[in-house]
Image (cartoon, rainbow, N blue to C red):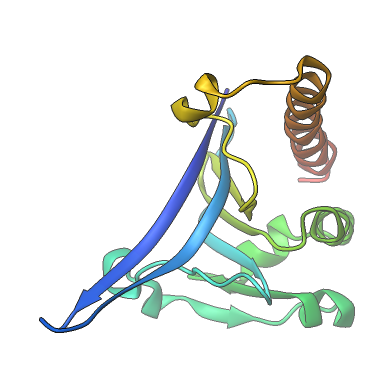
Length: 169
């Protein structure tokens, strides 16, 4: 089972005279459910992933940064877990290689593994597949079919990555 959505996270501040809105994240999120439980909490961010959530809301202060044995992976990703053994359980060498491949494809990504769910997020500022206003614009069917096929390929790629690595677990 999986869910997919386009998500925008903004922070608005106002001092009365001036206001400012910063977009922290605009992209796609996918949530995958699995029959087995993975870990309590594991967060993996590409080094260039800007929005990392609200520490007070998710109690991320309890998590510790985990350094993996793969130097290239450590340069590209930041890993946080409540239990460092969970990180080594999930981040097998095969899975780390797949994440490096996904990073090259998407440019940045974040993964949160908790219980039996794995959440993937990647910035994708140029498209919003679920925007109703796009339905009123004149479309090119070949271009739309290509976009839909890319979305399907993204989902299949991530599921394939998880399936292949899940057998290692």
